[in-house]
Image (tube, rainbow, N blue to C red; front, side):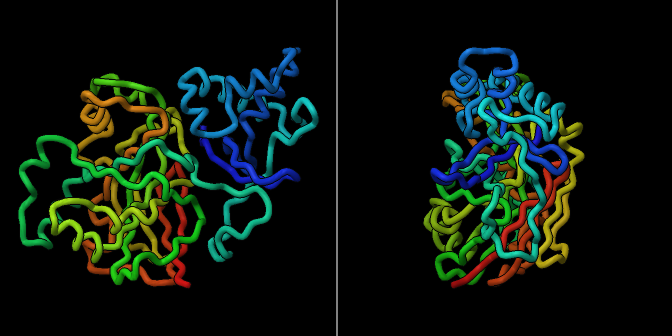
Length: 338
């Protein structure tokens, strides 16, 4: 499934709900499951649906494989019924979905729109797992790759409360003069676990999404000169989306092509298969003596050539950054300055 979170306006307020994409439509998974239960003559379809297929993505992930299995059943039920499916009290289950116009102002839709597939991850760890990238950045500093990098996957903990989603504006941060994008794949943990082996690690991945670890390079390097961080140089925003693709939808993870465009011009191209540290190795390393939780977000780090830093080329106000990894889609962000 291509799992999404979407914002919907109702007479009693705005709500973010978990859904799944199907062609030009979007299925509300919680309401689809309530509809299915009502058809099966369950006496309390809403109560059972809320417990089994919760309406928000984090709660859905916290339900583990059982909840995702029920969500898949609800999705298949809704897809089979098509436009005729309605909730137990005639609620909307299937919404029309159209990819955002890259030339339109971001975040201005009055209807249903996608937000970050996991708007509130429980934590954010971003790795530096591509050898080509650390080699290039080390060379810029006139240094070799630190030998410690080859001993274990290295990561920093980012601000998991500054997540932005697809087609959402990024406001120019911190008076930086070197705003950069970073082309990454990310995985989301779907099960609680401790001391997970590399062999068992894939079963803990709920899905994959695109990640843009925006960086204010001048501020980042000023901070890291003190041998700590990064902090403010990255904490202002991390974009993820447009959807969270379950592992069964991706045949060969290593074959995924990674692309970055700025204002339609290709700036970066790479392949996920060039990664040195796998997600399984990351999961095994982090979970050693430390509990992982559903909703934890792991970024792969930047693919070789996947950022402006490697080219001494940075973003400007008004730029539109598009990161593309199929079959996940395109993660688009417009940089704005007040």
